[in-house]
Amino acid sequence: MRKGEVRVNGIPSGVLEETTEGFRFSYYQKYAEHPDLPSVSLTLPKRPDEPHESPVLFPFFAGLLTEGTAMHIQCRVLRLDEADLFGRLLKTAQDDVIGNVTVHEIEEDVS
Image (cartoon, rainbow, N blue to C red; front, side, top):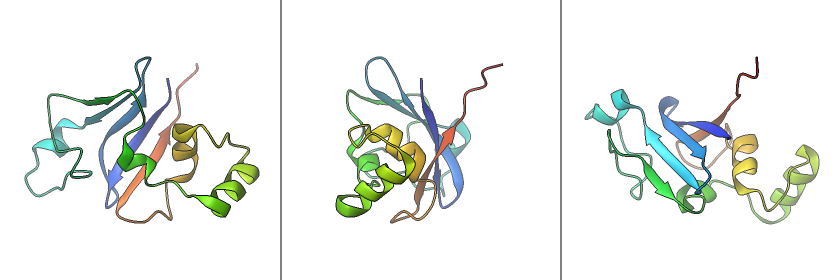
């Protein structure tokens, strides 16, 4: 399954992953327990012991994606399926996004 590390202001906050049922976002324990670090979003409050789960990509993360002409150009240049929101997120949301949250693809070790 595909995964991405979510960072807030450059600080690793948790892991977003694709599951057989949809998507799961889990905060790193240390991040969730730190009182001065913000939640990723209002809709994904810090929960150190319980992941957030959804049958579709969480709207907050889908909102980080480009739209319109920029999306078409990104998909053509990077050879991405426009309908694969999670794939697009992993390939395009590591920098130059609106706001302070980025998503960095976690490459699976195939050895």
